[in-house]
Image 1 (cartoon, rainbow, N blue to C red):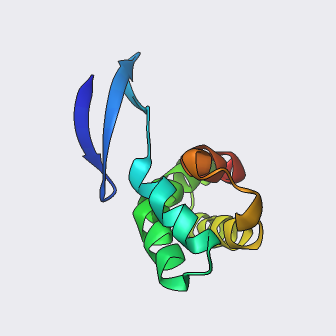
Image 2: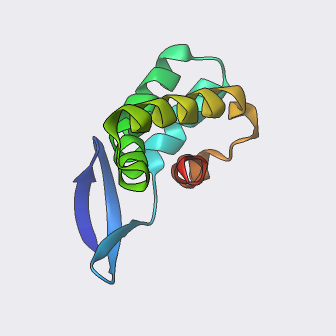
Length: 100
């Protein structure tokens, strides 16, 4: 396992064909639980925790910075809208799927 600091989050990752695959997003899960309890500042922190990864994924898929920012904003709007349905331990997976 390789220890890495990605997008403000410290995660343990494993190498899979030269790319890092996060095993746990414990920080994101903690912020998600607090946001689900109504803490808007926690949702803001959750968004900042994942915004770079979401934006970079969207940019890679779309190839246009302006469009990727629009997609990133939509991802977080959907996450906020459906936050009560999100498993806190899977918030990283949920944001990635919404981008795609």
